[in-house]
Image (cartoon, rainbow, N blue to C red; front, side, top):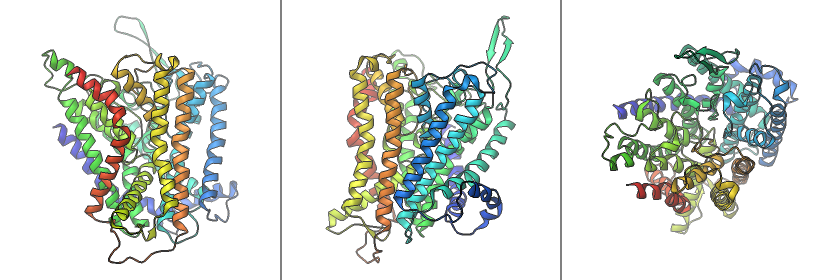
Length: 559
């Protein structure tokens, strides 16, 4: 039954890939098409307001600078609002200003599409901050990532001299993708009893007559863009395990598809830009193979029960339900865990800290690889980076200059790709080592031993991958953790994006090379296998020693 539930959701996802991928292609191909009829009227006044009349294309440097400046302005505005929220409207519960290091961490977290939360949503933010800062950041950060992906795809597939205009892409990402999609999902969630109100926290009498506080608020609107934009930050502290955020198995499936469908459709969009649908399906197939591999691991581990209970001869025939909601069960909890870390969303419907050690490897691995579907564009761009690396390695084996989509891959591109690949493990492993060596870092560990190492490692993996979920046993709302994870989120987001934009700009300047009988094909099953192998081998060589010290050692000691 559990496998059937998972299979149904995966089939629904696959059926949505082509129509959604085609729609994204029409939105960003910058040619007149049917989407103009529906949205151009709303975009014209926005373009006039920001002075964007000619919409000239940009070089990769201009695009990157526009992206960075826009993000800097949004960060400054958001930080100021968090620090002043007690004096702003829509604060019926009288919540005070957010502490400065926590404000730094929070605003960086939401601008980088990470949504790491070192606070509890219902008690740390006013309604104004939830709507104007958090929800706004969920739209703008997702739009920024999608713009970078589209610029990268244009750079490696087109014969033009520009990769598009960031401001045009940024506006279209909001008006044609995130706002309409979020509106529809919000209505669905409200219909399925997710709250959407500005009323203050309710005070009700409990079963024994004592007063009880029940937090409510504009939940449905935040919940929709939280998943569509692969943001993940919860209105409530327990995120999508809360019955007001995710009340039923049906809403659970809606949230899974919401955070998965755009990321899964982007490879098909890439295939349309490359004028070869096979290229898109190759990338999608590579992602899906790795996804199913790690989904199988977490489902099998959780189904087989808690090793400690097995050792004590306690009946664990129903699997390990520790930290999971009964209304979802193991199957939907395992699928949610896999999707939220594959798509770098970070929302959770179960406590990752209570996963079995082997089950916990799945969220670790998917964030460490950071290319299996990924967030809005991040997964696609990173997987294309690995595709170029695979072509380069194959070219070295046969003594031929490698080519990708009709352009030669040379030392400049490989140096930039190396920066992107090496930066990810560096900003995970170095801060984790520092946190384990420093007293201020170790003080946050609530479960000493191998699991404590996993808690620390997970926090930095989640930050670097712009995921935001956590092993929530870690006491992380301290200046050390707020500042260190904030810096990791910054580097994890912007260094790789800028390096890969530079790759796109470099590839775009190259002359097209005609395909010959000796050209290494990247649109067949053989390349899918090579691509999956390259991703897994590089991931294992980079991160396996760290996993051995954490979840693997924990598993071996409790069997």
